[in-house]
Length: 451
Image (cartoon, rainbow, N blue to C red; front, side, top):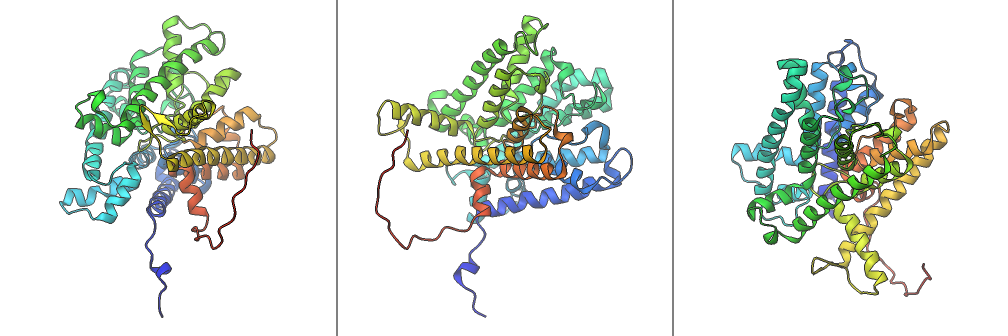
């Protein structure tokens, strides 16, 4: 039988990456269902295992059972492995096999790696991946050592070291999973460490470093950390990272001064404000209860969730560069300029169209999921559902406390959002729609009134 060219066409890079994530989630789910994975020694129901596996591999952090209270040492190891694979990317880790064996990586594999780490160029992609692996080991190791200074005296050598490693990997991969349920109570995240500068600064540093992006790491090393020598993308990312730390910190300090941070000293309030500015950009930890934030603080958290981290990093969200381009597009329209410029460079129209599409898709999915969950469970408050949906879609992991109250159908919606958020909104939509066909008819142009 003759095979058509369409049938012989290889799977796209996006499809292979999605398939890789789906297979890892399935394997993780099956392992978490085993009696050996739970502290009680009983089987975990499939939906709970699927929800947790998706949250781990998609580095989200939303949970329907407390991580420390439900999972055994084996179960936590499975979760940690899933977080590490999800943070670095399936294709990135698979590239270790030929790298360690000394085999040459072909063009097809290099294309997959370029898509996985969101590199601008296919040239030098193996070097970027190698540096990403080495950097991950060094940064997570350093973070674990710093956290061990706090956890070992508190929990003992073995347990404290294990907790330090788990939280270092979870923070660097922007996952938000924690084991503090056995220390300060279930589902409390890092709230008992809100005044601890060592824990706060270490976790924030890990989150920010993981969220920079592997391409930026490589550029910084190549340019020996000289800002003016960096490529445009790296300079924009560093400026956005600084701005999204300073401005939201000041806003949280103002919004929550007499709210959830009332009673704190000035230093503690600054620390909590900075942590609240960093963690919504897909990390998922919290040092103050998310459900107790003021209306202004909740809205700011939603905006930071949507913004997310940087392209090619362990973080999710629409990405900082996407939001910057939309803002600059609005400015250029108001100034009646034809083009959008960033640090003296003109942006291509294709990039602007993609940025607009990403945000529109994210917002459409968010509104559709929010309406569906509110219709399924009208007893849930709209603000809490919005936080849950934005948290899942942008792989954040923060919650107002309703995750455990979600019905099975609502949990499935959240699972799909977490999976789609890890892949990226456009990739997710491309996978569930048909391949584009060339237009057979060229329609005449016309105009619509807008604004």
